[in-house]
Image (cartoon, rainbow, N blue to C red; front, side, top):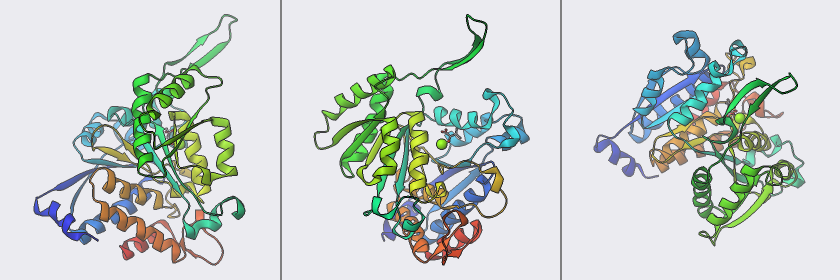
Length: 370
Ligand code: IPM
Ligand code: MG
């Protein structure tokens, strides 16, 4: 533990400004625990974290009339990092696409130019029993890093509805990728791979989609610059199958916005629960967005049963990627591992014989061991 390195920031008067966007559903509960953990890390390592709350999603619609108020983007832009809960819920499901809470999240990612979404899916030794696969399929566990393109593709392509030639209404969403977009996400994946097991699987649908064929070509070009990294291409349908057949074969997965959305949910379930997976969304500056990969789960909101670990681990990613506070990030991650080893569980990862905790108590246990 390198307390001196951390104190350095305080001695130099370094403050870390964190924009906190709790959002909807279980968002405020899980973010509350992550903020609690960060405050504790601040006290323990003598770092000055400053939190500024802003509204996003349904909460912003209810209070300010729009899902992504201008001052929310400004608060984020004036911060060193953004911590986000989740957006959306049945209450706002009937709004038109442009006004939906989810649109705010997409606008935030785009507005901060956060094109690289890092979603690590790690099997914790203590959670082996919560993995839905037969134990013999995962003898050595897995440590997968999904690198999802986040500001392009079908999420941001042209869309609309129209009446076709035969008089029927039709809707369309277009998937577009430029070489620039492919190269920068590819570069991110190759850089990450050099620090890991030097193996990338690029996931596409090049047997059907033109955008995937360009994706594949650009990944091949990039790989020439990284002879030490092995690049394999895999169709997305096969990747979905391979993930449940032999997840240990994967190290880094790089893929498009939509394929990454789907495969990261699948990968999360292999870890035991979607409540375990953090994410970091990064661009070309240090300002990153950190959020659990799960949604707002309105059905369990306010019940103090949601798993706060994905958000707490997202806070750890923030310390590492935006602030370069490595010891502090490690302290949070070790604390999570420790608490799981000690048998504490929220209901989503509960197994008989373990100790069932609510959201707040889980946060408290993690704080206790940092
Ligand atoms: C995610 C979520 C979002 C996405 C939704 C809420 C718009 O599913 O972060 O994975 O599709 O990106
Ligand atoms: Mg998703």
